[in-house]
Length: 129
Image 1 (cartoon, rainbow, N blue to C red):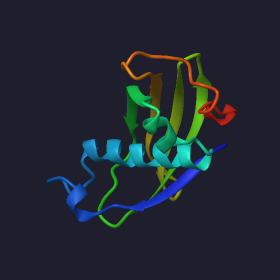
Image 2: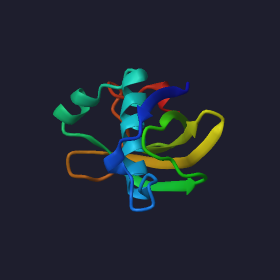
Image 3: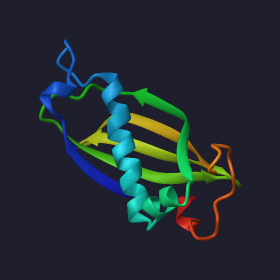
Image 4: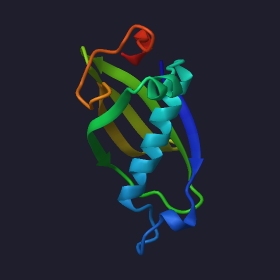
């Protein structure tokens, strides 16, 4: 399953070179991952209320082209790997046919004490990967 979200680059996200500052891509990608979880029916609020968390343990971003103010960007997110307590979500940001950035985010499911644990059945979904 591929989840898609569109965003428009805002002027304050751009740096002195007039393109999106690299740190802002982390925000774009996080927004799209959260929406991916919503799209697959993951009970994020229920998970938090039960004292669990999903943490990003690693993120890799390959920047391909700059984006500038008012660009319409499409962010695609999909799962590519799933382990016992973690997984990887791949993401791609495009502007039309141009690939702006590609990323992989490794997530870890943690228990109340912040230590990685298996997803309880009530939060597990095969669409996570």
